[in-house]
Image (tube, rainbow, N blue to C red; front, side):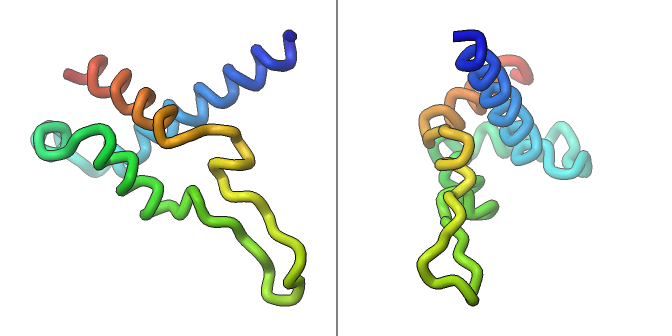
Length: 96
């Protein structure tokens, strides 16, 4: 039980950090750019963009090993589109 709570806390931190990194970039976005991002895109659209940009749903298989694959980031850390959308909703609420 304690392990599951710890894993959930790690997952929540990972999602929060991912949402912040996607919205704020590398710290080079000004407030107006961020405001326009929130205005022009739904959380679902931002999730789709983040997943595509970072290839979060793609598995990885080295060229020399055709039967072995690493799980996608989403599989490895056990989160879904909805989980990432919820992290973006929380960020939007805190920033808005």
